[in-house]
Length: 436
Ligand SMILES: Cc1ncc(COP(=O)(O)O)c(C=O)c1O
Image 1: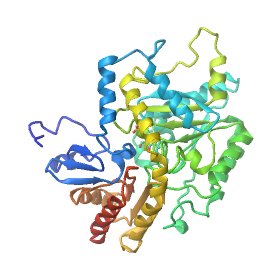
Image 2: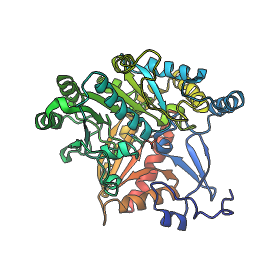
Image 3: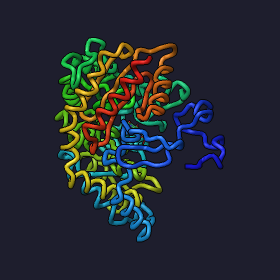
Image 4: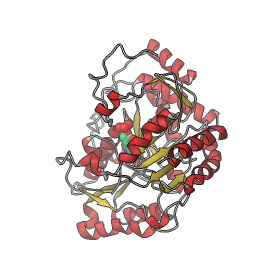
């Protein structure tokens, strides 16, 4: 339990109020199943699978053992022009659960890298087709696509981009789909499909033939669980098809069962051209991300080069790291063996009812949910996000870990969650939020 031998000062923490945190730190010293133990010995229910990445629950010995065994057998093999068995096995497993004809998987180390990779794949695909003048990308307000320059260029959340103005040019944003009249609706709202026409207007304004790809989170996660209106994703797909634009689903949060199906693409019955993924791919036990693409994209890029030449000048030293692949293979195995996507689906009704039961609390502005993800948005007090930050801290000390973005607390329990954990989550939220 002792961490104080070290100063907290040297570690510049990410997305953290460093000065405030270091004055009153919240340090997790152990994680097991649905719970964290903090440095004071308190038990904290993990209400969002860490950061949406541990749906099997924490501390799975099968994963730890597989990583250990892998490191003792082959700790590293260069990923360029050399391979190791684990990455081929994991790519095959992922390709089996992605929708047809998405069958080719490129490994990276994070969600942010998956976005940069997808951007480059879109550029390479159009260039290989002789369509290199497609240089514009479309994103959406309130989008979060990670923090690399590619993802920040696509970002729709002001704090993530206002400091960094020198990002990729040629990105335009559609409106987000959060509508006041849809407040407190569980699942997909009926109203709002017309917002997809923003893409059609961009095609009219800029010329559809200049747009390379459209990036969307099928359910916008980090900004606070914004669920697409009925028909919205279908309409984006139609417009993309009319203009030869690639549709990219950022499934970094929604991938691997979060919505009660393998991917959001299955949940909503819309197949994108490219899917980015990360987080739950290894149950959060090793850093990893991936990009899966349709056969046509892989084949077009690959066949555009001479047979013995490198076709795609991109990759990372740690792409498909053996330890990450070992964690990924076991994670995928457990998803299947324990039927956890189905379990996520089964628990989603109880979860939605429980979270929406908080509706009567005066401080709450909106509640949104889909699958095993929900956002409880509070009415702002003072600067936007300041109440959210305060609540995140209070909830932690009251024994519940919830990730807040601005004034939205985001819940995303593990798929092994039981009704008693959901009850505990909602009780703790009620106690803290009722005092606001
Ligand atoms: C939709 C989405 N894309 C990309 C990312 C970036 O992932 P990472 O933090 O692993 O770089 C995230 C992270 O939360 C995300 O939610």
